[in-house]
Length: 65
Image (cartoon, rainbow, N blue to C red; front, side, top):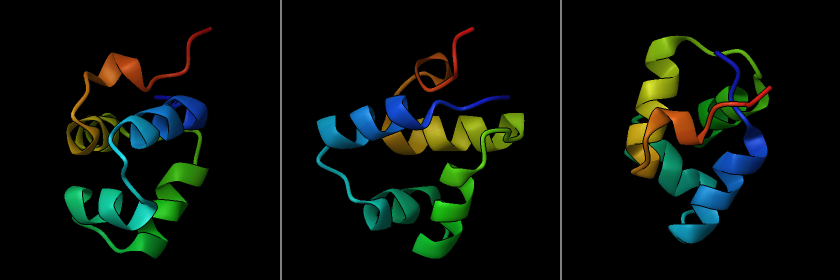
């Protein structure tokens, strides 16, 4: 699945959430979260966990074509 970094940044801003806070909610280190965010292709599970950490539906962070 392709995640949209811009959409993720918008949701982080709405939640007033730093990358470190997002990483904590997801359950990984800040460094690992940066790796995840810099990947454009992620697994279905990663996309779902990322959406849960942001408190949004997974469709809200996916890249639209």
